[in-house]
Length: 211
Length: 211
Image (cartoon, rainbow over all chains, first blue to last red):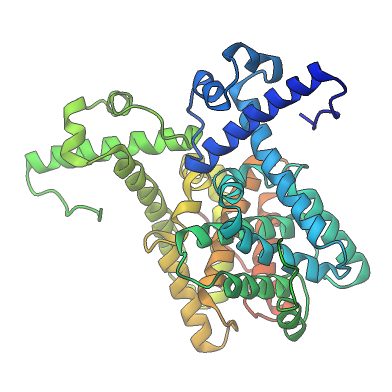
């Protein structure tokens, strides 16, 4: 299920393109409804690839949809990595992740709808966002920035809160997304053991532009 | 969409039973897969009622599935109300809600699977658990037990964390559910402004038995 190596010749390039077209179609379907009842025929048509080629890439529809969610989570994780390269403070990394996510709900709705509809079942896997967040927590605990007894449970709270924030962005577009994300980040930093005043400040530091 | 008044005669009683059978079938389907692609025919067969009677009760499949989720959330809310009647401290109410939810994942898996699969889209509605949690937050803020600037966002974090805890129970049955729930409750109380030592204590107070 890992990302295939870069294609080396025309045959491999076409093969990779077909796979990518199927993943893209599955992502679109997940973003629209979260529903996985579409037939393989429908998905192949949407991807504009032959029905038969589906099984060259995936054993089942479940495998395709799982790959599609992981593809989205990996894109989100890379977006964070890219924009937060210069941030060292783990508290700021956590806060910025929430604030960027709220903005991405506006600028990349398809990506964030996939997270909204299918993110929960990927919270406790070791791909996508979870390992990145686990790494930030670990660094913060080691340096004394974070104080907690159970990092697994902290990750649970962060993941669930992120999904709920994305849900809030889509369900209540009238609310100020930046404000909500900063307030949420502030509360979660308190949860992680950051003193209240500090949490308030860190959750409002300047944020990198998304493009 | 509110719960109908108690039936007054045989006709109304049968009508209420038919509706309840459809809601129960929809709950079972949601618990199994979270998927809403089953046909009305399939749902009616599972409920053991005539296909035609579906439209006496629901305008669409969406309305039925929404009612099924609300039915589950209301059952959960009433379970909390019943068992936590004697608890006055809003911090203890929040903590006990999380700890009872972890236990209910074991004792009432169908109920909690509905929450797991469909709870997110009901986080920001005004039925089920959200209004109860909002009330506890309000009481806690008024008494100074909780300190926060944005109760909507606090509710978001609590709701998302509850879903993620239920997901964790089902995805990682090897973990100690009581321990995870208490640790999560402790962290969330810190988030709500409860001092760390106090949060630790409140999250471990004796819990009422579920039956």
